[in-house]
Length: 373
Image 1: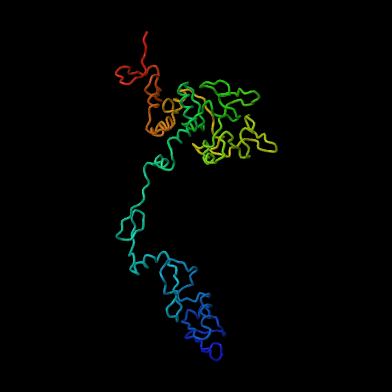
Image 2 (image 1 turned 90 degrees about the vertical axis):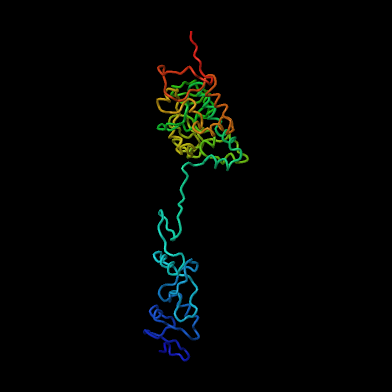
């Protein structure tokens, strides 16, 4: 039928009807084997594409689809067809591969979908994380850096072994110390522990001995960025470690807060009523206000199932790291042997009392020798 009535226009419809003359075929006409010869073929073809005039489905949204060429996406009457790629539903992918002769059917092996004839080898995580080897590969002079990082805690641990007074900073429910505290550790008031009053293993509140300080009890606060996991400060060229201070959420450091129970900020114009740390402990990822400072004796730690004796040394359970902390060398354990096997060795953290038998005879290594009157 002549659709437009114009002379020379030979657009025809083999089936179906049009309600009015139109140069843009509808979807119904497009699915009924429409041919478009004539002078306006290119215009009509592009219009048909915009309307989704594809037999068997709509025009794909993207031209960059990694799937098979679909004959359904070829307009009827156009030789050569469309070279675009069409989407393939997930459920038809296996049938598609089998029909094309590529890949063949698939099968399930240990929760993985693999083609038949192939063996799946799932990735199994290591039972033991090789953290030391990875850290050693990523850091030059790894042993020296470990020793520098743990110098304050090593000195605190050795002092505790000499005096029998253990000072630890931890959350009350923990059975380990996040940081070992020594005489050079800093208090919230900004003064060191050795600037406070004398203390014992049973001290609860150790007042500050510096004149004019209102601190009534020593409360450890991290004095290095490494203690809160901020290691990038050390990489700055002009960084001065002595200027670093732990800060509150109000952005003012701890020494600008009052050293009383509530610890409000003293900075002019600041409405902060209580110190709330803007950092986390590098050992447990909890805030400063969740921790407390404990003064304890060896017996108190044994009763609380806390490490003491030679087990109080940093990385006591990992000999390689322990040697690095003590000497800066992985294979040098002479200081540790001197502490544990020399004169007056450090006892292990094992429960014993006056009724515990001691094997004096048969000792091949030097150790404690009783003297009888």
